[in-house]
Image (cartoon, rainbow, N blue to C red):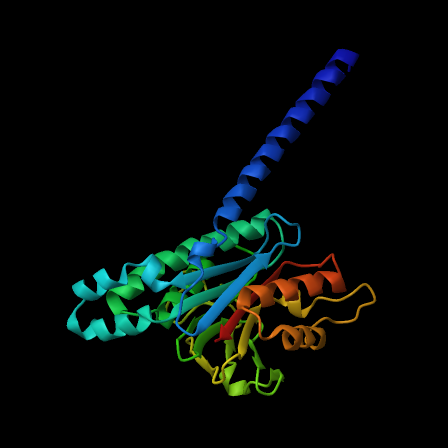
Length: 307
């Protein structure tokens, strides 16, 4: 190969790298557009909520948060006016709550962010139909999403999820698909409190086992998963904190291998429990990075505080 051919080949390679870099920048911008802006934070009386997904690479990853303030997103007053009489009360009850999804797709790269965005759109589209036909979000939505992911041969990464709804009274009803269980910090007892195992029922990762009667492919050796059920936790005391998170937080360690979770986390919550949810989130994030500034995974933290 001549010197001229070598220069042309090198320039062609550089141009391909520039194109790839632009594509990655464009996808990064698209992924960030799915991050909830401050205007999407749910507003529920006597409940303060704040949280974010923190990508390990600082740009895009598999952790994702979706907030559903039903009143803001779905024109609930109009839905109530147009709904059959039997759905009106259910819709009013739903409008008083807020929904929160914490999602963790295997990996912490652009491919993981893409799968999270697929879930994001499928979920929000499904919510609109659930409200119209049932007046609330039912487990049917998650059976359908689980089946869609199971039947989609191109999606090979594991995906865990927790979806919950918080009410003004402090009741948190949630469904978990192999996701780390919620934590409760009691303001009265000044510590993390144990949650009964019967309130922490979890199901397989999204898409790994088909829902009953919802499969197009052959049934795997593990069989069909059981139908989803819903757990319930009550935040009874003023100042109590409910924490949703991904395993990037629970697995976080310092360079010597010492765990951050739950002991160090409990100390931070104890020290800053009187602050608003946003400030508590900031304190946990700052302390986690001080503990080890280079996490090995994406980290999601959502603070739900009863005021």
